Length: 153
Image 1 (cartoon, rainbow, N blue to C red):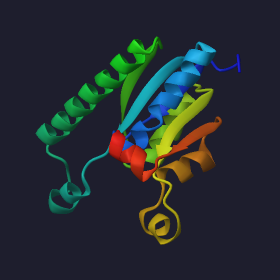
Image 2 (image 1 turned 60 degrees about the vertical axis):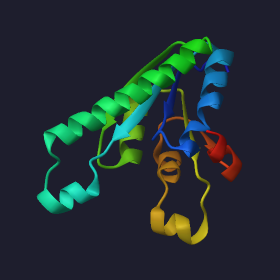
Image 3 (image 1 turned 90 degrees about the vertical axis):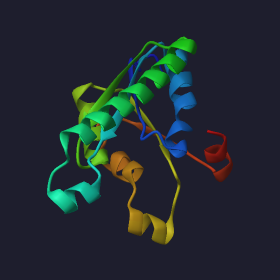
Image 4 (image 1 turned 90 degrees about the horizontal axis):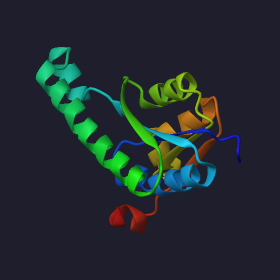
């Protein structure tokens, strides 16, 4: 485990993704690794359909909201004694953006939460976690949220 120097934790700020944060913090504390927290900013699909572009003020507001949330997560990491940085990522496909960021930052481990949906729900909705696991350049730790853990978060 001493080979783990860089951990990336990806979040969409949902309760299912936030369930993985304590695991990322524990792993960072245990290994002394630096934690990078990432969030992918994607334009709302409705805006693409109606106007073909996202108005700048909406994009700026989304970025500012994401940066505030990332700052809160950094504060949690610092409170837990973990060195952490955060970065909003731009991308139409969250899985691709996460995998690209993990490769660019040479992450040793990637941590993310998953809803744990199966069957038809997974086929219809797809799964960012599944795509990340299949294409990541490093080991991926997925933390499955339960209905109870999503309510607590």
